[in-house]
Length: 309
Image 1 (cartoon, rainbow, N blue to C red):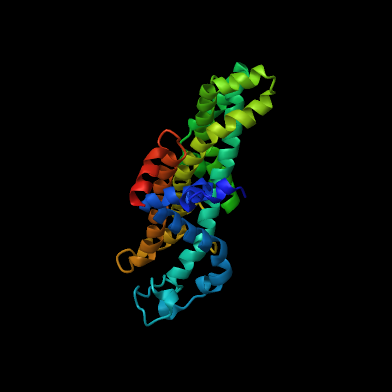
Image 2: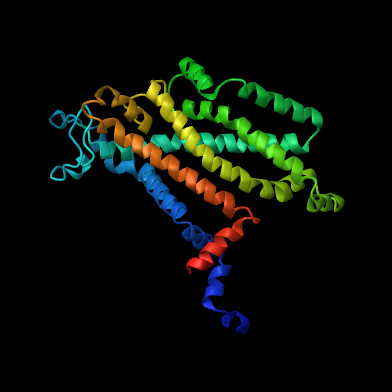
């Protein structure tokens, strides 16, 4: 390391680290920071929850049928109460996080990849290919998302993979149209024209010069869309055409507690709270990413960070 680098203040060295810069900007927005912490907890539950608590979440105990919450003298798994078959709600919420997050994440990733690829082709290829792809998007958008999901799931077997497939198809036009609009604007910029003059191939221009500019916007939309897809999955499970027992999701838990809303409100309340908090955290994180990934607005977080320092 050079003598000049050694003489730099520690704060400047830390600020030159991209990871530290992101953490400092995240810490500047306390709501976004709390959202990330909560989402990390949900992700941990989704990954390790079934391996640790699946047996406790499925074991029936009729003595604990509709057990009330906040009974700290009981087993800690019953601190949120029990369901109609005496199964602990806390354990079931942790285990159900895996199916809920898997369906939402799978649908968002598939629709993001396919929609972005089609959008890049539509925005940078010939007019004929662009029109064909746009008409395909119009066909998909002509059907309401939930109605299309209901029709397909009635025809197919209700499973996690079928849910991912259906929800991914309904969300493709969002990324297709957004990426195409971004490509049409970016392709006219000076650095793209310079790459053309230097003889770069179309593939190199698209993936090396255009995609990195378009991707931050798509990632922000995907974060927000994750919440929408999770609510759609919960709605389908609530209607009884999503994932079927013995598999569990948060939406299915809400549906199972519907007959007991007047006598055991907690059976539906706690999984509903899990859905609300996860959706709210994703929305807050999406708002932070919209500012953090935009060089024109990033100074707001930098200014707030320096003010709090």
